[in-house]
Length: 329
Image 1 (cartoon, helix red, strand yellow):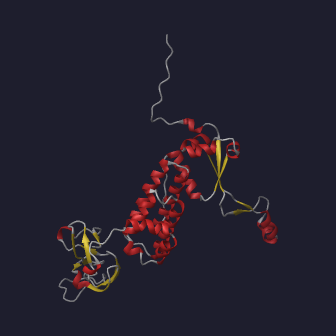
Image 2 (cartoon, one colour; image 1 turned 90 degrees about the vertical axis):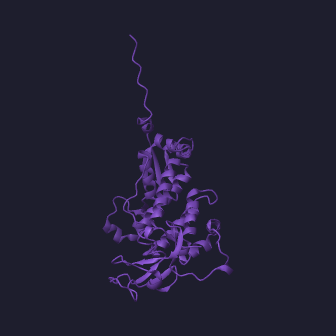
Image 3 (cartoon, rainbow, N blue to C red; image 1 turned 135 degrees about the vertical axis):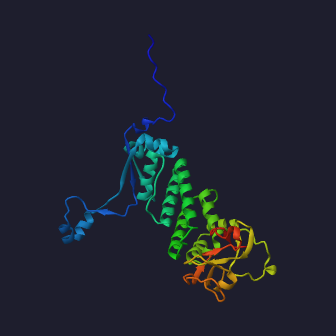
């Protein structure tokens, strides 16, 4: 009677081999925390602060991961775990320029093949995804790089929604872009290309902000990439005419018209010619209860708005859409 052969492992079965071979330690060398050694009480610290300060040691965060799993993530990390140098012998790798959140999200991804970022403001979430992407690029972790790229681009897309980014968020956004351009290869990285495309697209908003002006002034590589993204104007300057500040191009009906104002309170619509009070196309003041209006309005729409806020296309077929307007050439 022949012996039964073991069933072949299915391709989707969990690979327990990644848990063999013990653990590997990852140390974050750039931690700012300082811990008081065991046995030193708060009273002793207060009475002999100078002596306690000398005994204080950095609370360097240490993380553990299965060695085989770490080696399987990428060829680059395999070199760090399997070698005859100090790292391989001690089973410990010291990382610089990596924060706790980034490494924790990497470890989550290593075990689950996905990571989560929850409860963060939208710019901080974008920064977190960007840092994870930089980490993945540094150690050639393609799966993590793909996921963080998708999440970073989705986070940036949320910046186009409401509420519009305020000055504080735009300053933080400039810091995100600066971090990305400082830590990624400028000439060939797809996330940098996406960020440059966003800056070129949002130039009407960003060019008035001092943080972005400083970013482009201090980083010529960023300015060069953005410049390549900016398309030429279709009309030469000697043929341009003065445009109405509320003239917008509609991507639905494919026409350029003076947009209507939609009251922020009661959502009634008024013609842009009569509702416009003062300003320019980037920052304008409107009155949603203009002289001669026949329909009553709540009056809450009076105020100063930017870009395309509360503007709708006057064409009936697309007047309900609020995100289909852009600046004409």
